[in-house]
Length: 220
Ligand code: DX5
Ligand code: ZN
Image 1: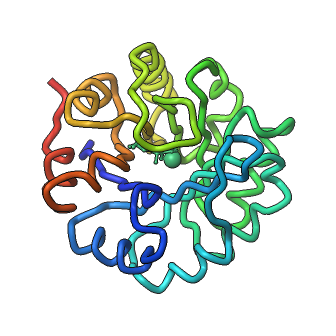
Image 2: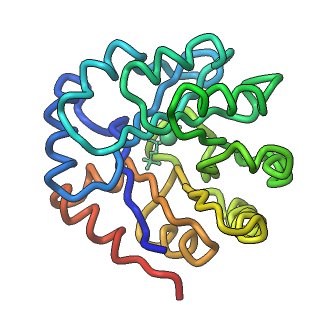
C-alpha cells in the first residue's frame, strides 16, 4: 500500500488558505487535511463549513475533514455540502457512533473514526463495517506542533491487524500529530498508510521537499 501524505492546513497562513491549498496541490499532496475545532471538544477554535466551501474551488484533491467538535451529528451534512470527501469524527464526541458513521456514508462521503491517544483500539470492532478510515491521534488533539506520543504505536499496529482480519475492504489507517520523518517511519512500520503532517511540512525548506521526504518513508 502506498503511503499518502495529507498536509494539515492548520499550520498554514490563515489569511491565505486558498493559496496554501493551491501550493500544497502543486507540491504533491495526496489529500488536504482540514482541522475543524470548536473551542469545546478541544481548546482551540478554527474554521467551519463556510470557509471549507470557500476553499473547495482551489483544488481537486480530496478534502479530509477532521471534526474535533461536540455534537457532530448536528452539522455533518453542512460539511458534506461544503465539499468534504472524508468526514472523520471522534469516538469521544458522540453517544451514537455507529449511527453517526452511517449518517456520513448515507450523505455520500467517506466515514472516518478518530481515536484520542487514550481511547482503545477495540472501539473499531463494532463499527468496522461502516468505516472507510481510522485516524489514530498520535498527540492530544487541539494544536499543531506537539510531540508524538510513543504509546500510540502499539495501537496503530493493533488496528492494522484488525483491519487486515476484516478482509478485502480497503480501510485507510491515518496518523495525525507530531509526524516528522522519524515518527513517520515508525507509524508506517506499524501499519499506517496516511500521514497527516502540519508543522513539519510548513517548516520544511519547501512544501514539496517536506511532502517528498515523508512520502519516501517505507515500512522496513
Ligand atoms: C491536531 C490536529 C493535527 C495537527 C497536526 O489536533 O488534528 O492535524 O495539525 O499538526 P502537527 O503535524 O504539527 O503535529
Ligand atoms: Zn487533524
